[in-house]
Image (cartoon, rainbow, N blue to C red):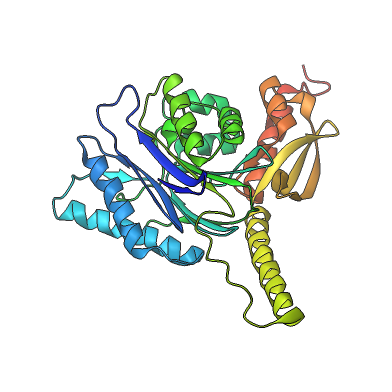
Length: 361
Ligand code: MG
């Protein structure tokens, strides 16, 4: 934890929670690196795995916002854990999630394996940056269960990707366009499975500074039952990890312009990151009482809407089961366009099964 001036620019806090005997979560706040690992394996092996992951990151993470180098550092952490298991440190079956961010000024890259999340708060609104590698997340994406159901699902802690389980694990990476005043949150599932995104949003938006935010978030998870270890790292964007601001070396207008151009390039690169992320996603949503397929993500990100209508289908929302129709009002996010089309064809089958064909006996 650290303070800059009167307010903490970033802070991290972990707590064992109310029902576990020891804490297998680990985190680091060493600008520009911020990371969270949630160890698995029991019998304290999870602690070994999450600590190894953080140690490897400290050695291998880039000092610049290079997403692919950060992803390589996560892969290196996987190698470390795999060889620790081979050498009899920890135990077979131990593993860990890892969600890591490099923050430089307003430039942020994230690499992630598992279900520890990154969120961004802007203008008091919370945006989820990462997509969980978990069974329930997959079910939510398919529209089988809701977000709310996922939080109470018996398989909610089953993760589909972790460090320590296979030699060729891959990290998902995200490049986020942020603005000064935004808050970045990294947290383990001990937070996001205990309280809703709306609650996280309210706490993060009203906290005085990063230190107050992590304290309030951990307290809220424990107030909600504290069923798991809980860890939160909060970074105030535009303050922590920023390179020292040197005055332009040249004099006059030309040097000033150069800085403006550099800043614009950085913003464009960030925007392109969210753009290329969104372009490959898809969702289905109710529109004009019919099922519409969109490429992109619903709503807007950083004030820009990132979706494109692909098809307004003939499937009437009212012909679908009530629960499905209700979900379609908010939109159902899926992996990609292919998955969206598959979902629509499921809906078509549903409608034709329930409809009584004219002239049927
Ligand atoms: Mg956990």
